[in-house]
Image 1 (spheres, rainbow, N blue to C red):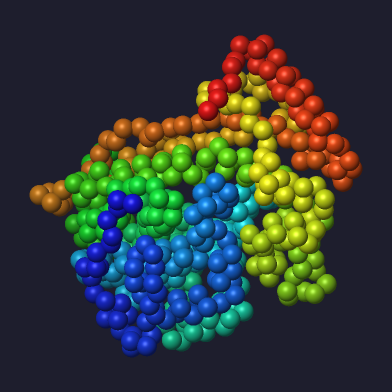
Image 2: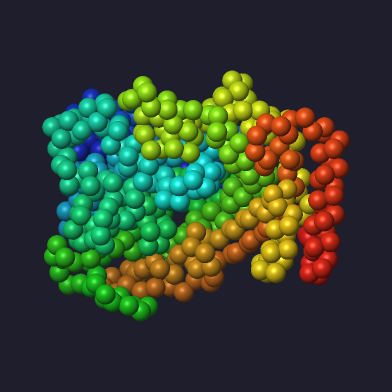
Length: 493
């Protein structure tokens, strides 16, 4: 890996910033950031059952079945994100004392970075694809908020936050808004006034997509996958400034406000000379999606896991910890946080080894283990027209269309075109820099599924492997005839 190791932070120590005794600081060893130091309250949060669950959720989900080294977990990513969030905030606090970043602000940013992925389910975003079949409103961010409340309440940590760390109910709202990336209700943030809105752009930046969550996972994933990147987050930290701007201004140039009131909007801007570093950030993201996250085999395994979870749905049961008489399905476990905490990547082993999900689900997951994956007969890189889609419906459900879409995180737009820049010689003027459109890549893979992967019930287990192969061959020929009718030819890798 060619990315440079982070240098010592050019900011005050946590010990000075939080004015805590040395015993109230905890240190961790990290493969990406070397020695990481976090406030005591973060250490208390880490040592709870709710947070320790993240040890059993792989950061890259099913990439592990393609990259054997993609075995790191959300546990270390959340610790790394918390560290970077606090580091970034401290640098701004040191370089710009006029921002009035206080201890509570800093601590809230640390905690938000630590808990931002607390609500993830197993197999990374594949779980959300499964749940969306049953609950369109599910999101891991909303689940993180529920899990956070459960963690603080069941471990009596909110008392510690209030009386030892000095946090208030408004601070709790602030932390939740950082995790969500938007106000809890309405259009206005409630946790902090506009003159501190820049704090919302540190952990999850919905404006430019430049945030420490991305910094950590790109460096961590590149390290684990041995994918090279030239991205250097320290350069961004040291060349960022917060500006007070006049609200409602549009266009390439933005006027900086002369004075800072509570109602004055603040935003993080970047020195123009690091524009290439910011481009490296999104190029790194694109490369990881292309090489790993949306690798063809990874996507096939993800489709198989979704089918396996759907097959297990009528049989798998998750008991509630708060109500012994309450038992939930996989698709409803998120409705009870005491049940959801039990859902980890171990679901796959429970279905295979313990038979908790029925014969069809076990068969699908065993096929993944034995590398008997769905057959890919080719792909299309152009958009499929509606007439072709209508004709292909005759091949469902044996035919499964698997889509990949790789961009910079905002469709066909470049998020950097929303970023504000400054130059050292003219600190009172902000402007936007025109970046070229993002690299785009989209494909639709044509996958053929065995009968037991989509038929309901357990009767399909009697179909011989030879008969299954004949069925799939006939289906492949049927698909070819439809494609010929539309004068379309599948591409092969």
